[in-house]
Image (cartoon, rainbow, N blue to C red; front, side):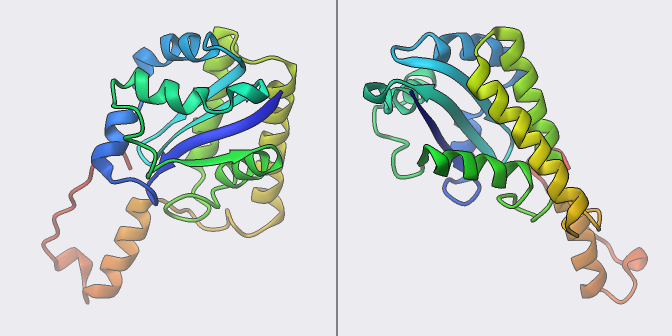
Length: 191
């Protein structure tokens, strides 16, 4: 069995496409059942946020493309439509990628802490569905430990960060007195 990760994110795909392949919380359990039931898929976890949708799966060697094909089919997309936007990792590269995502190193705002909570929620759902077995369960437990250690042993979590926080700091630099400025903030998700 091989660990693979397929996904798209804010660096690889436009917002409209990310929205199209995002999983809303109401459909996530059923989607996990379906993915875990795909031929050659032994374990599965779906991480879906406003900035990324990623499938982490442990698959048989001959089934390494199945999760990417499943993503197309699940969202009723023509085969190959996502290919130019997908990133993929296998084996240790998939583990490293998961660690980087969990620690906030792959986030729009480096070090943002929300992603770890989102991974923990994806883990909770995958456990409830039964799409995780011992190997990926251990990997995710190690991921949580690595993320905690990075946050406590480095300064990555020293300052509160989010896209909204960063926008306010930038606006403060642009205007002499922010409280006297008329500002319109337009967003495409939660902050």
